[in-house]
Length: 126
Image 1: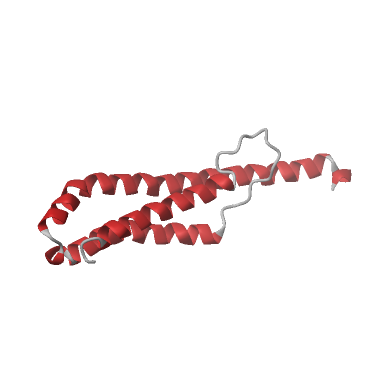
Image 2 (image 1 turned 30 degrees about the vertical axis):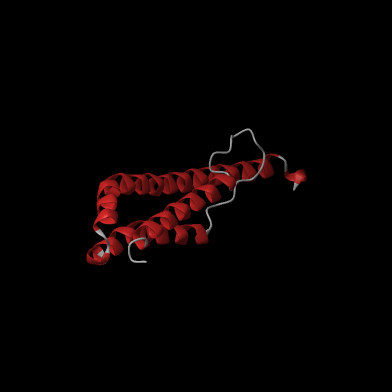
C-alpha cells in the first residue's frame, strides 16, 4: 500500500486540478464577448478548492519522502524517473487553474459592466 500511495495522491491532485479548470470553463472563463449569457463571478468554493489544490499538488512528494524506505526499489526507481515531469505537469495545471479563474473573473466583470450600462441606457427594460 505504501508503494502506490504517492502515485494515487498524484492522480487525485491531477483530477482535482482538472475539476477546477472544468468548473471555470463551464462558468464562462473562455466565453466569447458576443454571447449574451451572464458570466458569474468566481465562487468562494472554487477559490478554496484552488488553495486545497496547492496542498494536494505537494502531498505526493511529501508522502514519497516519508515512505521512501518502505517503497520497493523498482517502484522507487519509477518514481525517481517520473518525479520532475510529474511535478512540471501538476505545476502547469496549477497555473492553468489560476489563469482560468482570472479569465472568469475578468469576463464576470465585463458582464456586470454590460448589465449596468444596458440598464442605464434602457431603463424601461428592467
